[in-house]
Amino acid sequence: MKIAVAKYAVGNPADFEAFAARQRQILREACGAGVELAVLPEYLSLELASTFAPEISRDLNASLAALQTLQSEWLALYADLSRELRLVIQAGTFLTEVAPGRYRNRAWWFAPDGTRGYQDKLQLTGFERDAGVIEGGDELKVFDLAGVRAGIAVCYDSEFPLPVRAQREAGARLLLVPSCTDTQAGATRVRVGCMARALENRMFVAQAVTTGTADWSPALDTNTGEATIYAPMDHGFPDDGILATTRGGQTWAIADLDIDALERHRAQAQVAVDLDWDGQMAPAFRQARHS
Image (cartoon, rainbow, N blue to C red; front, side, top):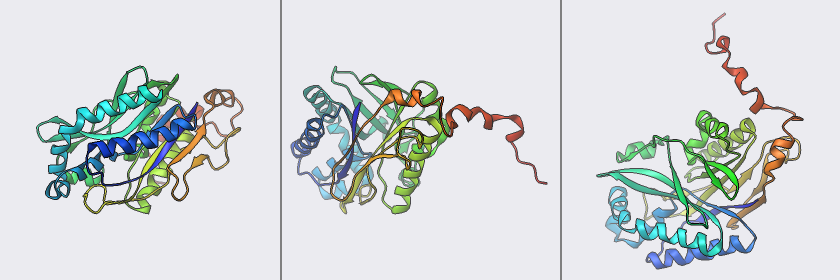
């Protein structure tokens, strides 16, 4: 299975049509490389806030409310592109109103046969909590994408091992991580989280990122990081756990995933954290004693 993760330079489209044209352009590039699954970053849809007046785009609450008027067009855009390109698309996230003035950071995926679904972000960052209008999700899911069972961990969620472990135990062998970080420290935290999830669960992890600056947006102001596809650091995979990563102005990092190799190499693993996971659950290890 060939997949691609985006390093998406945030822009300021003049209208929805300009936004849609860019999505079509970059996804056609991925499709032209033979990709079956493309992952876009968290908060990408907030780029659409630039289509509103400055007093709206510069105010997070106002921009979230205004964006709801574009949600049906946004959903239709990626559904159409998925069918047209015969490409599974994880379209980053759309902050979706679930109650008056309350939003969830929702990561949608679209398949060429018309099916689609989503995973809500579970854990909120300090920025999201401070906004006062964003709430965490209450359900953990896995999906079958192009014959591979996958889960989604939206940015900060990739730093928490137990929900991802539950997705792995539900059959996920691929974790999609749409992310958006504004500091090098934040980018490092998500990168380390992705590497740890790949190691401990013997799974592939695909992280998309935003890049560049958008001084008109309180959420997309500064962006950093590299889009990367991770693998377990074990037989048959790179020693550093990196299958592909973007450099400089690259939009896509692309890699072929050998899902069968995850299972083939399991019995000969150098370090089988996935098999030894239950060892940490021993009653004696649940509480440390001072001696």
